[in-house]
Length: 474
Image 1 (tube, rainbow, N blue to C red):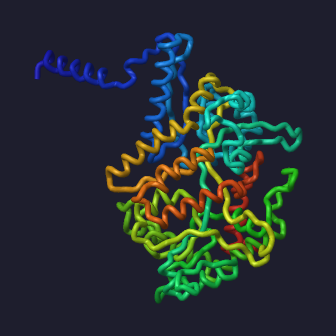
Image 2: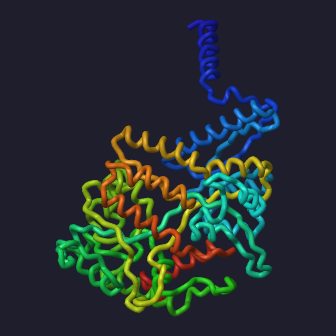
Image 3: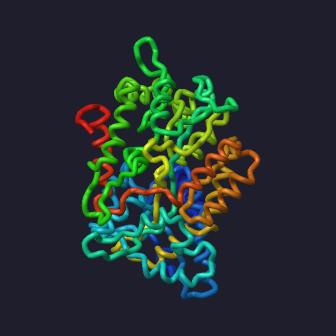
């Protein structure tokens, strides 16, 4: 090939790439451009989220044409590099230290208070106050959000008692008891009508866990009845069920060793011992990946495979696993049972809430622009763009779309009606399960809002492992 011919082909390719570049119409020196740096984890809906952001950019350009003083927004999107950006927010902290932080970040709600206490995030009270006069039904006002979600982003300094809003809740998830109806029926756990009867107390749950667990000739677990930490419960849930808490009322003293928490941990340990020990149960969990590396993770889930009778787990298993791979699984969802000692007293500890929020770093360069993007991403319009994109994507490959839970009550109820209640393709078992978990959001507890939230999480995890593996007593 001659040099001239090669040069012409190269120029043609460069020209084609220039025309195909979706951002070629935005020039760095174009008047009115405001860049918003956004940092978040990547996920299966990343492309749909980016579609919503393009709509935000398009709206700003249209507004600029009508009013040249209105900025044209351009979003510069990045993602965290660590496996767990909550426990290891290295990239975010390095950007802060280097004077180049993102303008908006999607952050784990329970961790916001820890970094807000160190001056990392902007206090959003003034921004939220502006919304009080907004006529928009999805305006960012505390009363539009589930109380459990909103309260998690309000941090009060335990020494000065200064309060502030440091994030706006977005994604939310809570927990419930998932059970395999066929396995319960086969073991004789049925009601008067012959239907599967889930446990009603901790004592029943413990007995059923043992009876529903099966072993092979070598003593290895082949079917698990129930294990306290299989799924997503942690010591948090069982302590709240038992009336415990993790911080004193003034949030200045850890109460991890209080009697209610200790008794919950002793019960967890006893259940593991009844199954033959935590080592056997953890070995059983490891069989999910054995020899099947090419299969999707949801397809390998031991509950989906019918090898687990009961587990406490989070809402996310609906969109990620049960909707896609559990169509033939005869399952149901119910409230996790409480200890018998809780009978007769008010207790909202059947579940617990977690999730994500949008936050603006304290040294962000474009705080006003970041707030505009935050408002848009928290709007029903943005959620509908994301929802429709995800629905079409999943339907194109023969799968079912289940929306994530949203911390805004109105948006969450709208999404349930649009994508779950009115969709005939949604099985009744899935619809009923989603409704139950949605109903639990408002009154469920959440992890303590404290500057030592990550440390507290690590310590409850360490205490659990020390107890169930008998490294230390509860």
